[in-house]
Image (cartoon, rainbow, N blue to C red; front, side):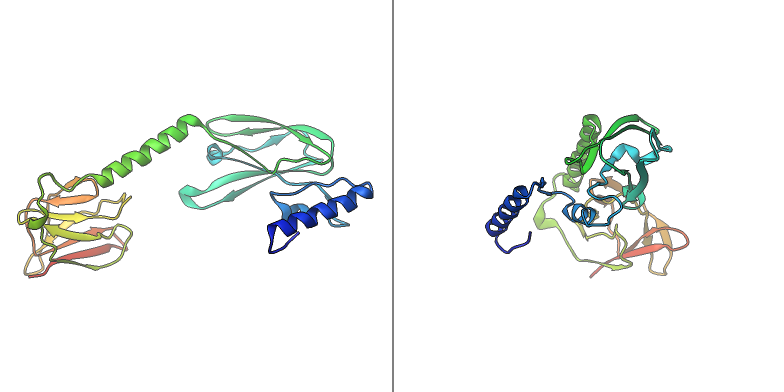
Length: 250
């Protein structure tokens, strides 16, 4: 049911339920996967009223071959969402009829899952997932540690009135491109975006174009260079090298 008013849509649903119940039909209010459930109820559909729940967990990152008891009347398949380090595998389970019972074994390089499968006449489970308190706690701790590192000041004892922001940032635009550079008359501070994981080396560029690697300290999201400079470059990569130039404006 679709309507601009939620109350009007709910009233239409009640009216339809009364009609169907009066003709001896049972009804189910679909809230998850409503479109898929509606398609599965169309006349002539091969698997009428049979849903396909999803099994998902972070721990399925390295999944071994699946093993199911009844592979004739139960359809089991694998798929994935995301890409790269964020890719997550999923297991799709679909019965071909109601009142079927079998088991499914999902083996990974960290755990083995034993799942009992039952297909019912009406109710179904749209999705199943697992969470792990210890892994969730470790993840939250890493997030907090990252936020603390980003909040770390560039140096102690800095007086705002002594800072000079006469620097411009030129060149390529990689994800780690600094957001600003400034000095306090003795040191240059280069600030990187939050969450930066790359650490490109810093080179000083002389008046004749000569390049020399310079020492610096990492503090939070800052490079701290214990000297002033006119021109410096951050370089990362070999074949397709990204170069970001930092110039002091006189």
